[in-house]
Length: 90
Image (cartoon, rainbow, N blue to C red):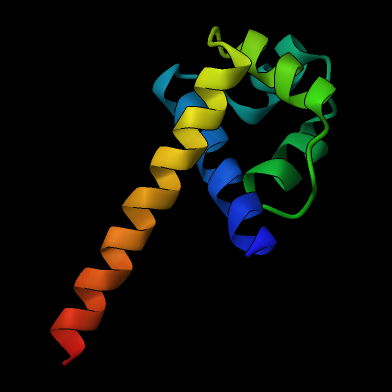
C-alpha cells in the first residue's frame, strides 16, 4: 500500500510540474532540491518529508494540502482504471 502512495504522489508531482511547463531541473531549482531527487520522487522511489512536500508545493504554486489532494485524486483515478481493466478482462 505504501508503494502505491509513493507512486501516486510522484505521478501527482509530475502532472503538476508538466501542467506548469516546468522541467525537473526547473522544479528542483524552484524548490531548492536536487534534480535527481525530484526524479526519484516522481518515480515513487523515495519518501518525501513534510519539508520536501512544502518546498515542492511552494515551487508548484499550490498549497501542501492541495498537492496531497492531487495525490489522492491520482489514487482514485488509478483505482477506477484498474476496476475498468478488470471488468474488460472478465
